[in-house]
Length: 181
Image (tube, rainbow, N blue to C red; front, side, top):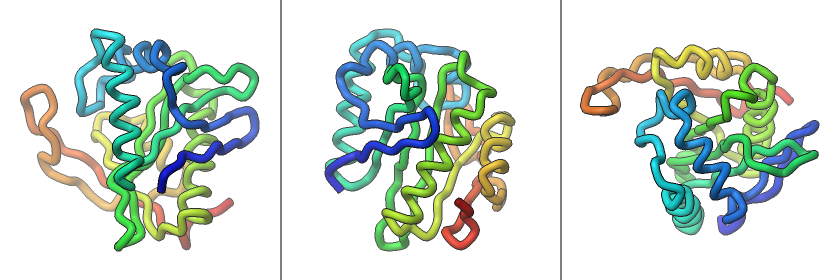
């Protein structure tokens, strides 16, 4: 895997993240509401956005991840990101992650974006299983997953250390056989 393809659905385009996205990535990853449930610290310096772009490129080169910029087709500026990490080709599964600027929450953008990403995963990459790990307090995230057909499989006790304390996480999944167009 060496390239992030451009994916479209309705008025949303998912495209590779590149240097034009430094400022909007900084805005996204320095936003307190966006970063509340993330396992990385909020950005305080714009150079961190370039480091993140390079991190995404390294993961892509190693076949371990793919990340897209979420854009509205009529103005191509990054308003969020979504993608795959922990890609496991042997077991044909991967984990999904996503984030979106609060001004765009509740507008169906993430539902459409993730649905398109799932279609790509199941139909083009031929994975069997997509997982999502979600903080139990992140109600909007697990409601999103429910709308997309994900099933809550259980609770991972003290799965992550965030800001110096261990936190639980829910694990959700969707299988190729359960995905509908």
